[in-house]
Length: 224
Image (cartoon, rainbow, N blue to C red; front, top):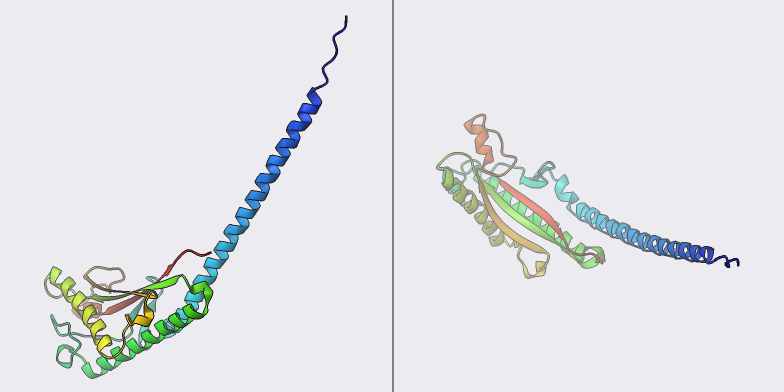
């Protein structure tokens, strides 16, 4: 007696292939949606970075009061501030060369920096893309190799501290309540450390390391 031939293989195979096709289709859709979401997020971040760069452009183009060091992504006062040995106060009797001109330039530089921060504040209030952007502003002092090693770190910090105090005394206040949530201000003394120091070739050249460095670092929060 012949046994009845089992023909259930092909329906089962068809069901399996249909299920696999459906799984692949779902995975493709999920990958496509996620990839699009990632691309959109990257575009949003790029737009934020471009907006921030555009707002900092006027300060980068200033070559009278500030000099932008592209390699280190920071600003340096474009004019020399030559203190007398061991001094840190921004006063006529503590600045060795052209104290009147130096103090005038420091005041102008502070106003220029404040104008930039006002622009950052204005753009943040009027551009929704920048609503989660804030800035770390660092005022750093450097020192030449004169004096004792550790004293130079203390000296460079006090120079930066008194630069901040001088600006504040002249109504250049980066910690004004209107900048709440926008500016995180820090005072630093790099002493004989830090990157981009002027190489020691002579005492005259090394004295150029008595300088102030301003860093404006964007802090970008989560984007929606």
